Length: 328
Image (cartoon, rainbow, N blue to C red):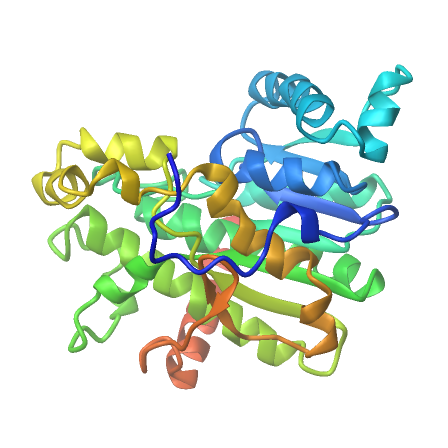
């Protein structure tokens, strides 16, 4: 598939700078956008920790990454390492964002390895799923997409500060706009099954991603840790393909009528998060607390996403829930 003709391309894999000496961590790195992001990073010299649910799938991805780097970037230093019989600097970290305590333990495991952290890409996510609760009894989209990354990021924050200049990329979605303007984003109704359908709940979690990103960027304004959020585009991933056959009629109808040629490939979709993660522009122009759409185009946010009071309400609520669930 090719990118839709109306997509502006402002970044390419060829523009990714040399990342030798940089340490990155990508959640959901074994497939889709996460895999393509990892490929872009490791092929340009970065050491990448792949935070995934299962080691077997991570190991499969690691083997495929060696093949893809050798075939697609034959003139890179990474390919030369492979040709000399060396392994790429890729390692597995078990991460289950569905369980907050396990998520915190995963962050502690990473910290125990003593590695710096220059790039954190919060990529993993759940979309269009049927109603369900996480291991902590929280609506599953909100738990995995927001709270899990909230815990993970905050647990790694001191390491990111120690490693600065560093970056945090929060993968959100234009689905954040699916909440009606008159929806107050009532946090007290997160677990109310009668409020919203799967895509609305997904959109709520994606709004939470942006609210968190902007609140965190504000807290880090005096540092060299830069936080930005992105929308990768409509991408041909497992999540999108599952939506086409969803048991929810609204979700199925939303995706079923989209022409295949409108979808980006995972490699194309990953370019926006790779731009925010690697482009010299981010430091040169001190870009933080911004939102980007494909490919590497800054876009303004609606009033709900920019609401500082809402950002702080979500932050306080998240801290409260995390404290209750992790210390129970």
